[in-house]
Image 1 (cartoon, rainbow over the protein chains, first blue to last red):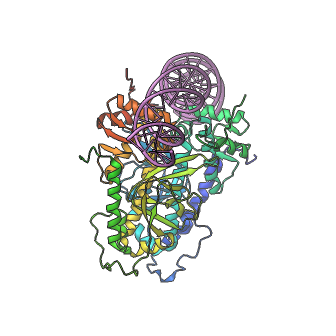
Image 2 (image 1 turned 90 degrees about the vertical axis):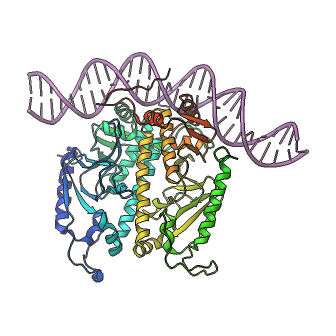
Image 3 (image 1 turned 135 degrees about the vertical axis):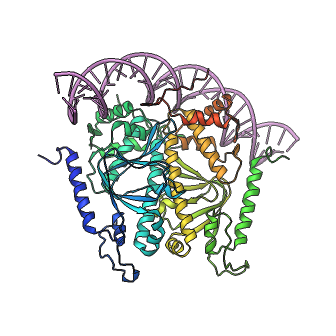
Length: 273
Length: 273
DNA sequence: CGTAGGGTTGACAGCTTTCAAGAAGTGTGG
DNA sequence: CCACACTTCTTGAAAGCTGTCAACCCTACG
């Protein structure tokens, strides 16, 4: 069977199985934390010999079953988590029970940072599939940062990246057009998958239409319609949760123009007959 | 003249004048950085005293004129900034020239954090009024964090707070109704002003309708209409950029219910005859 | 085999955007 | 001091788009 056509779920499973094996093989010395955050080509634990404390910290690797919350909004934020395998959604549950999806989180991303502000998680995290996370006690963070500069840099960069992504998310939702919003979502998602080393053209969405709709602030029917529209335009090929970006440039052009330009800039209109 | 009725612009000016004086009086020892980030009742140990000695921490206090960018999107991120007085907007300028307002930033907030990810600012910052910021070189951050634990904690909390706020922003924009979105914006803004020590009921918006609209993803006419609607409902009192929250509880009830609850939760509808 | 859940598509009502014009406040120059 | 231009804010009316409701297809699962 062609790997391009086989169900991607199987590939994902194999992927986290590999990731799991690698994590176990590391034996989890604290000096490898930078690697867990995505440090490329990092090795030689204890190379900074003068750091003392040769005993590796017993930070636990936690398994989270599908549809299971890793932590709930408002809970005491005792740990932050580095995703090793699998995917999560972060949610904000309204007082009326409505669940708003803030973001989708994948490998090497950090969960629970927003809890470091006042000691309580500002959002909850739910696994979209069977996942593994690496738990770091919040009280150890200052120590880790000061003792391993590499970790400090990685840790700071991870939070900064989250901030930048949050900005992109706001930008994403600032569009009125449902199709443009969906197109932007696909582009951002594809870029994140590319950063994680996945294919740039094909991507498998781990979340349902309902979650996407919640994330984008749309009705799930509108998301479905938008996918169909983008497919009819020849920009995408949609097969349930498998997306293929057919014309990347055209997709960018379509998604990037905001709308009725308030001032300056020529007017363009994407009218498809 | 009653401070509640006098033009707030004068109050704001007096405010930053006080802030400026305070900052200059501190003489900027690095150990006071935590205070700059909002540490309450912090006194600098071993500060050098006289204003004439240029020895301690030559971190500059920068003045930014109204409508002037502090830094541009994509520029090399050599410093992060702590706002001492005034207000900023952070913007994401699209390739088509459209300026999307990501956030409004006020005193004790940090600007430029998103540039720590890859060394380039992910968003630009423009002063809404004459403002002063304290510039911290990015290369000094690890040193500062490891040397002054109090600064490390404050710094981490500041970034975490930004993340939590980013989540709230996403939540804000997940609503369809323009009036609900505007109501949520007012609530969040009021809370931030309250955290900064301002009045909870009265607030003066430093930004124009166009900026609010860009931030909320609406047309500026819709923002104007929403304000009028909320005023007609008896929730707000709107006089140009001066907002008074008349019925805080009702405003919360109106803003917090998401909309047509997708599943579970009873259906409510805010129909105003 | 039948049910349940997710995804897609259609039709209508409602809301928002857009276009257009007027009102109010501000700054400049005579 | 006034007039003028300029910007911002507000309001009105029509067109377009999205949410809602409803139906149907498909797959997974018991």
